[in-house]
Image (cartoon, rainbow, N blue to C red; front, side, top):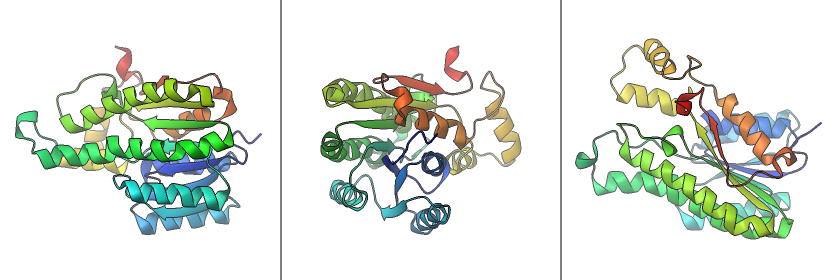
Length: 257
């Protein structure tokens, strides 16, 4: 059975990592996929690959920190596919890794622009389309560091805490419209962003660093993008019709301590 049969799904940050896995799994489950990213070659290639498999997919270049661009792309996607039913707010950046007292205003603002305003803009401009459809599911990618603290990347952690509470607020606001809003809180997932974070933190042996970070999780290893994608499929599907305002931790037990 196709769990996302004929639902139009927007995935931001869709070209790589978690976003790519989400797009692929939603498509496999019958979704029609609008891919939003700024990585044009990767995004176009993914759209082409999905179409070759018989899926309905198209790529749009979208900087989620640009409200006009977000609005135009969402409207175009809704026009192309005939509506919007699912929004996966996945686009995000790690930003600078400095202690708070060394961070510049520009460094702070760039992370908030992508990770927080991006979620705000996409949610703001998808609501009218979901209301017209009569229902919707908005899935916001937060982090374990939207649930617990950590002694690094302060702008990133602040942004993911904001996403957690934005999700709960919007779940309450839009419940009468049958629009569900939930957050997912991944542990460390092996993606290009995590790889870059480890390199920026001084790791020279990536395999050893990956194993070391993996041991922070009670299950003893990092997760894969598919681990998150299946959570997204669940929240997008009718299986989750009574789920809103929830926090889904997919973290190998990291936050269970």
